[in-house]
Amino acid sequence: MLRDADRIFTNPNPEAHLKRLFPKAAAFSKLEGTPLHFTAYSADPQKNAAAPPLGYAFWTTDMVPNEHGYHGPIYMLVGMDLTGILTGVVVDYDSEPYGYFSVEPPEFAAQFKGKSIRDKFVVGADVDAVSRATLSVNSATRAVRDSSRMVARALLNPEAVKR
Image (cartoon, rainbow, N blue to C red):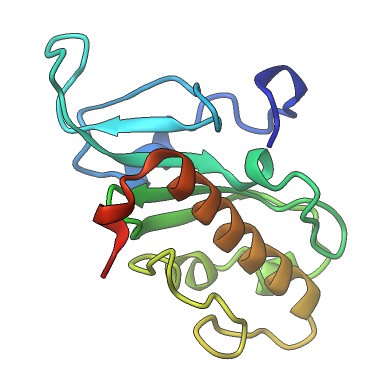
């Protein structure tokens, strides 16, 4: 996992992405904590100190910085609720030569919404494969799986994650 000082910022203001991942959120924390994450709140914690969190969002590149596609890292923001269910994935940036038909189409990220951290995340089984771009798709899938499980271990109540 990266510390804030070691990060490479590709999107310093991901507010629109956060709203896509948590459309019912009233507020988001800044990127903070260990591991680095945003917290989505159902009410503004500035006005209500007891505002309950809805879940967390995190950059895959902060969790698994050495996971690279064919050409380099694929920067994805992942949302996860408090039970380990992914609320969505946003592919923010990639430099993949075949990204335009592998990791960039909305269908790629959309297939992760509703997946549990307990799912397999296996390309060709529960994640759709894309011919001629298997390295990029496999890498992106591993990044979502591994980073989600890391964040879940660190931030979620294990009892809430059980099916």
